[in-house]
Length: 233
Image (cartoon, rainbow, N blue to C red; front, side, top):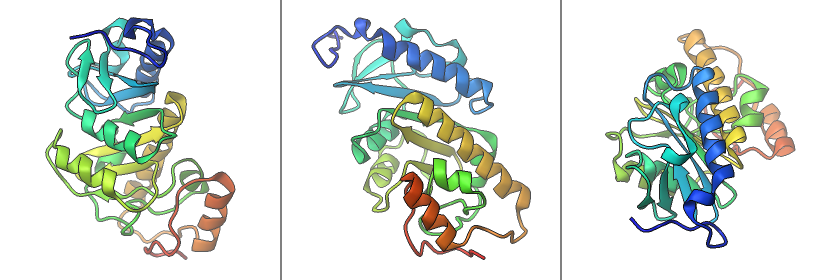
């Protein structure tokens, strides 16, 4: 493969800070219980390239010089073969120009919640806590497709509601952030919201009212569509 270039024409190997951030995020994701075994993948955008965990890699065993390098079109440029889920990452970057990092994991409670009926058409999870609204926002359920299916990524990219995160049906979450710390933190908060969802099922717990949700979303700049549906009380 030809060498990748960074924002100022630097060789991909000079993208050391971005590579170190991916390594640190991988370790943080595993330490938080988000990525068992070799599941999950993470990426960071640096100028015109994306550094991504390679296929079949443990996220706590990444090294800065063993990452896949992709163009913004999702095609490999340098390094080992990237995860087959690179299209999900491309979709999240295309949706939001401010997104600089994407985390896709198979965290247990979020994966479990992805097997349940969605709370509303625009959020798989109910607003059970203010922190879910503040740090994640509405999280649509994307219909099932086999892992790596580009059509699912296309569906994610074309969703008309604003979002920072989504649940892939019978699979798990994908989360974007302004940097890798933000993306991992949001994935942790989403896992906590999913854990409450599973623990409370099949009860009908109190959720935040729509007014409470919208006030939090406006104050913290998080995505939430008014009259999203579901049962707020």
